[in-house]
Amino acid sequence: MRSSTRTANGQPPFSEIAEQNASSAIREIYADIKRAQGAPLVNLIYRHLATIPGGLEWVWGSISTVWGYQRLQKAAGLMPFPDRMLVLPTSLWRGVGVSEKDVAAIRVFIDDYNSTNTANILAITALSQVLNRPELPDGKQQLAVPETSAATEMRPGLPVPKLDSLVPEVLDLVLFTNQIGELRSPPMVASMYRHLAIWPGSLALTAVLLLPLAEAGRLQQLRQSTIMAAERLGAELVAEAPCRFPALPEPASRDAILEVLDIFRTTLIAKMIPVGHILRNALGPE
Image (cartoon, rainbow, N blue to C red; front, side, top):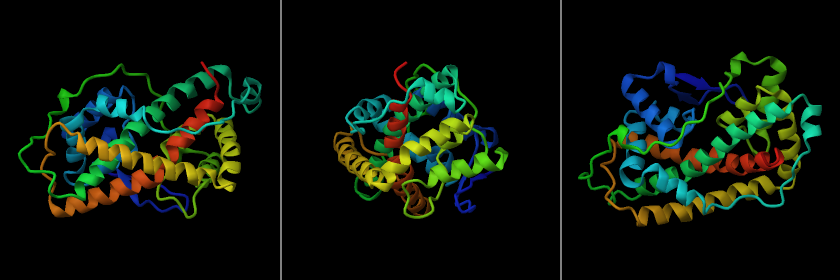
């Protein structure tokens, strides 16, 4: 069963397969993704790829076969992050109803988002380049069996609220924050903002942090620098690949996969990487 990620204008262009609705084969891949990332949730990019025949299998199989997730995490350390970021005092968080315990919980899941988003943008940027170069895959390399991924310590997770479960005021705040820094209606709602809806005050402070950066054009600059850095590092990952890439999916799936990878790497993930680091810095050190 597919569900849809509602956008700011109410349209659901990005369907997904949630873990509880996935087939046994997709659930195995989801479990492997969580083991490799050490994160309790499967990112939206993978949940959407699961709706494309062969999409999730080829993308995650290529990551596991060619690099392994730990190699991506190592390369992620070379990505640029925003500087001169604000740290908000604890009293300000308390003033909007976010306790010190809440701040600690938010730090944990923001760290998870920052870690997985940075590794994922490198993976999908590299694979986008592979899909644009048909000579790279030779069909001789077999996709890795999901259980071969190295496991990372799993953090406990918090549920991500569904948009239709939010009260109207909080839903409006999620959609408003999601729109910040966009020139047009975004095609999807960032899971990070849905997560922050558990503490509406934290979402309001996030919007206050981002609005002046968006007005000054800084968020767009950060997005572009993230895209460019990912393209440079992605090209290096392709060039140094220790084995050939697995055979491409059928042409229809190939085109659909490429379109999705390009949308995610240039819009949602490229924006949420700097946003995640801005917010994590605002939360202060542990």
